[in-house]
Amino acid sequence: MDLQLKGKRALVTGGSKGIGRAIARQLALEGADVVIAARNRDELAEAASALAAESGRKVVGHTVDTQHDDSVKALVAHAVEVLGGLDILVNAAGKPGGQAPPPKLAEITDALFWDDVNVKVMGYLRMAREAAPHMAANGWGRIINISGLAARSTGSIIGSMRNVAVAAMTKNLADELGPQGINVTVVHPGVTRTERTAWLVGARAQVSGKSEAEVEAGMTANVTIGRLVDAAEVADIVAFLASPRSVAINGDAIACGGGMRGAIHY
Image 1 (cartoon, helix red, strand yellow):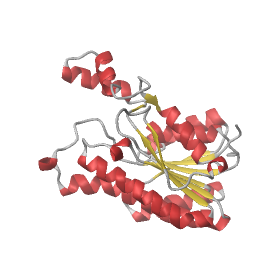
Image 2 (spheres, helix red, strand yellow):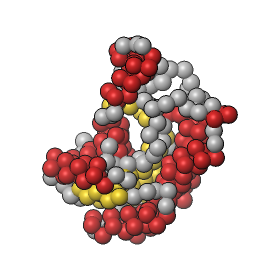
Image 3 (spheres, helix red, strand yellow):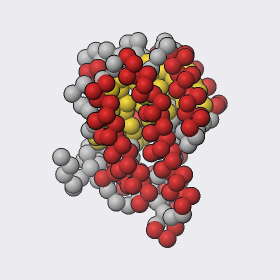
């Protein structure tokens, strides 16, 4: 299937590593020019160079801290300048998760909550607020918000609240922006294999006294496909949602965790 992404102009936050980088890579391989944004300048430079060399497309890095409105404004202005416009926004910037047990109620401070929510909820909203007018001017656009399956399960108070908020924001934006030709969707990955997974599994094995195979088996115990979903497989779904082919999907959530046992979502 031709996703009709050749020549589209995309901006991916959190694009220097992990799921964000995998998404930027797939968009570029499908023919889009991409600005990737993150906080670490060196990681951005390496990622942009590698993705441009692999895809043959324009891939440009730009530092951003989505907690700050002026930083977001500068990023979007630069993306529009270097790409000649903006068609696609993928919000994938967020605090890294899964490296420590989530805090319990008594351990949650105002700072822990607001630091997380300011990046992944307000940060996404800031990005959409700046990007949407450029898409509306052309009568077409796609905004994809990367959230997570904590929106559908307990176990992390902040994680669940944050991810549910992203889903609620997505539907509100879809209702408002849909008549302007802009589709907005949210993607819920589960535990996903990225370049940090081997380190994470090794660290958990060392702490628990289990083998790395046992640790990874525990991470996938509730996954019906029996293994971790790879970041590249999440990127395939996002590339479709970013394309003109996805016009029938607007305001909805797409889970891509390999199939979680138990609850029915409809």
